[in-house]
Length: 353
Image (cartoon, rainbow, N blue to C red; front, side, top):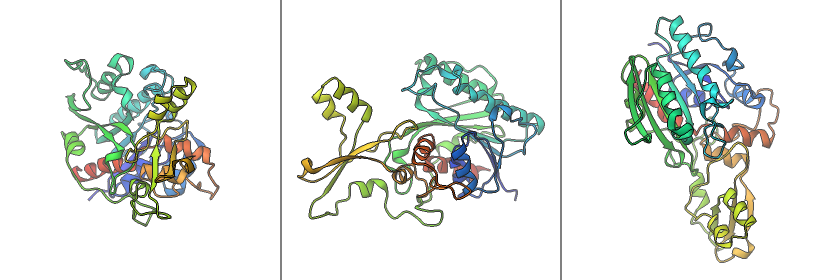
């Protein structure tokens, strides 16, 4: 049996390779330009060949792989950005990934890659008057795709064109993993099958996932959410932990809007807001009936790793045992992909191929 192989574009800290390796898929190469993420990936996958800048990669000259994954830059698509869309300087790099896929398929007589996986923010559904997602679908199928009658892209769907089978689905990290994660992180995952009609089976079929790991070898015993709202009493009191919306908190404080400020604090059962590359999430903590003794603090890089389903310490060191700064860790984790979501897709690909 041929071993399945994977290439990771816009690799970041190697989440797709990590998920793939859990299901017997071998990562072969990666493309990334950020220094710290490259070093982190090299530490965990020393045999991966690093291609460097995606704009200089030629798909017909690199090792063919069964699967190409890419979470292209989302800055111009995000709802909190300027919404420049796929024409923006960063998000337009999406087309280089499409070019590499086409060049590889041309060089291998349409054999490789068999599957492509694209991940991006929910804002890709609506940016550029909803034309960006239409452009994404047309880029994979090389055919015109009509806009939905409703004028709005559904959170899940499928299209087919020129023998390319495509399915997409919005996955929220807070509902994935064993145990589930405690972060609200909604991302579009699109699967393109160039060799059959298996995209829907990969993306919509229910299947079991492995447990979230505390290290490369140990299974997590408790999730962030269970430790966060544990009913075990400390000092005879129940700890209360509430993540809150920092952006809303700052704006309402500036406006002296007391009601709005209070509304920025979440409830005990609420998931953490989406981890972002440019900021650190805060949360409030106190013991029951001792609100005045409470305090606010930031999530640590370790806690951020847990919220993404990463092995603990995944981003702590580079391949030369150099310490990665907290700033670089926060940025890398905020740009990363939730592990259980990518594992679900890799499990599906391994199953159908």
